[in-house]
Length: 342
Image (tube, rainbow, N blue to C red; front, side):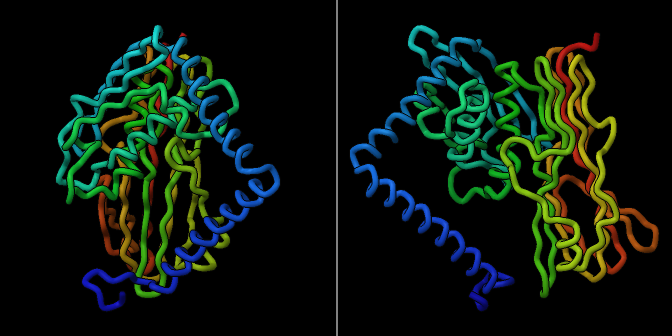
């Protein structure tokens, strides 16, 4: 692997990660085997069918409260996501159609179909009042149409690295917008990476959640298609050549309205040795939308404050060389507001 055209920087670490995933799968197999041994295969399979059928029934009950809708949402990179939702109450089904979405892009914001299906599952599961486990049964009453060759169903060899971490967020917000259920959240994972020959690091940075009918959005949270936990500051600074100068709520960055969107954050990381850093983010050009008269949130921003006092403003996607004493600053977007302010 070290002599490949694009070698891994830390082969031992990558292998350790793969071994951890295999160990987790093996533990799952062992626990399932224990259930079969205790209750019998027929009983276990019966309960698994029930979980799936119950999820489908929960979504069908949900559809009785939903209405048809459509929504379009532009990414910072210029591509458009469009969705139309048609609810058939007689047959207890809904059609989710992404016709009108931009063709696949030369950028890496293309998303495989599985990502879009996961976003649809997530959105409809989040609207269910019952406490049920997330599972494929939620999709049984939903008919999803994704045109081939579009941003959400790209053909090989389309680049898709941002599809799962960024485009998924916009698909989610677009679906909530079509349903009139929730204003846009920060709509990005603010993917920040850095490294050199000695260390490599990756984190996603929280922001504001969108407001909805009857509730404000939360401040400084990971929203929707990300739930990764950030490394504790003490551990971060002990193991990497960084100083976290500040990590604070970005006040007044959420959209106003009858219910206010959550605020984003400001994260300042100063480096103590040279590294190469990259940011992959969205909503640096297009603001997270408000709904029902609510106002959009503030845009996010990225910049480098150099040790000599100069400042380099960065776009939503950028790679930059950092030297000892340089500070990378990420200001994440807030969430949109919901309803007109009284």
